[in-house]
Image (cartoon, rainbow, N blue to C red; front, side):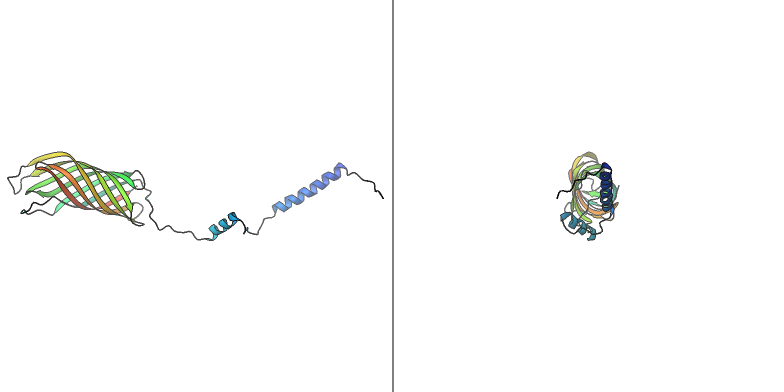
Length: 220
C-alpha cells in the first residue's frame, strides 16, 4: 500500500533547526570535569602540574654586568742573596670592570705600592693596569679567575742603605698576569684572594713585583 508523501513546510524546518542548534550549544556549554589521561600532551601537563619545582644547584652566572672593587695586600720584589729584604710592603688597588660574556670580562685598575725595598733602597710604584679576565666555575659560588694584561707604571727609587745603587724615577709599559679564587657572597657582592705578578721598569733595569691580595667587589 502506498502512503501519500507529505512535504514539510519551511516553517516546520525552521523549528527543527532551532531545536537542534539549541541542544548543540547547550552541550558545548557543559564543562568537561574529567581530566584527560591519555595522549602525550595530557600526560606532560599532568606531570608538570604535580611535580615539585626542581632547584638548580649548579653554577649560575651573575646577572650583574659591571663591578667596582678594592684590593689590599702585600708586595714583594726579588731578594738579592746576602741582603736583608723588607717583607712588609703594601699594595692597594682600586679597579672597575665589566663582562663581555658569562666567562670573559675586562678590568681597569689604579695600583699603588709603597715600602718596597730593592737592592737596599726604598721603592714606590704607581700605575695603571688593564686586564682581560677569565672565570672557570668550581661550584655554585666558587670560581677560579685568571687575568692577563699590561700596565703603565712610574717607579721611584730613593736612597736608603746602599749608596752604590743609582736612584731616581723610571716609567714604562710592562706585562701583568695572575690567578685567584672568587667567592660570590651574594648577587651584588663577591670576595677573592689573588696572586699577581707585574713587570716594572726601574732605574736599575726591569724586574718583577709579586703581590698577594684580598679583594671585595660590588656588582651592579
